[in-house]
Length: 163
Image (cartoon, rainbow, N blue to C red; front, side, top):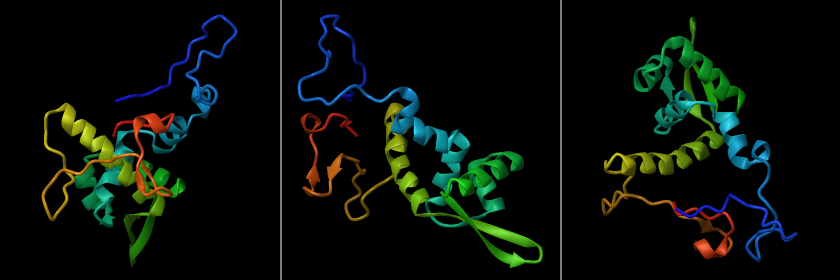
């Protein structure tokens, strides 16, 4: 993986950057990754999102899949609702019971988890969990430019990661 995130001051008055690269990265507290991590918080939230990726679930089913204590799961579901990643829809009125589902933003986060899951599987020597149904090949994520309709190479973007 190629990541250009560390800049040093060469001490000669120059910027110390590779020609063609625009400015230093934002301070850590303003980075997009920091903003994402502030929204998702911890592993329980990621496990909830992963569990809801296949469709809506009731609290008990979600608790079984995630493995969190009820108070932790309740807290994380409230946080996900506040962040606009999950929506609770009542399925009974007396008593009020709800099922949880991902919003469009939650589905975007679930898609990002495919890369994280693939990374974890590779680190453990396990097969990936996401396959192309017609041929059985494990899926790969790659940087994509929707305007050019093609994969973007490492040499074409300042912050391209080899996914």
